Length: 102
Image 1 (tube, helix red, strand yellow):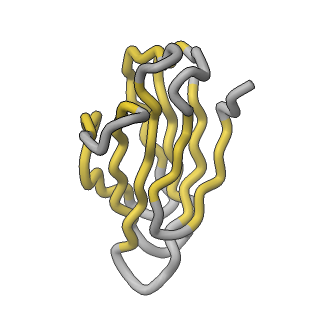
Image 2: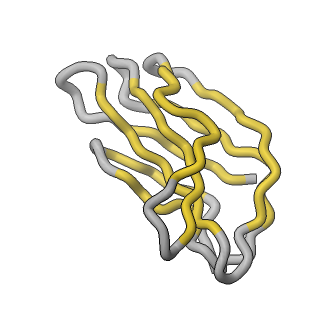
């Protein structure tokens, strides 16, 4: 079963839901838990056999110690799209974001 809870640290792209997890998503909560610096966040879907990305948002700047809830309608049935997040730091500190998928 797919996890709806993620603690993400570092500048990387992370798969939140794999294609075929068959999870219906109504919203996603993002919390910048780094404590000092802002973080830039990309949230997107991508077909398993493709490199084409479709963004919900790109370079969303989330200030330190704040959260953001984004409403979306998404279901990742088999052979369809996976849900991904990419973090980019705004300063020298390693970005850290907690994610909850509803």
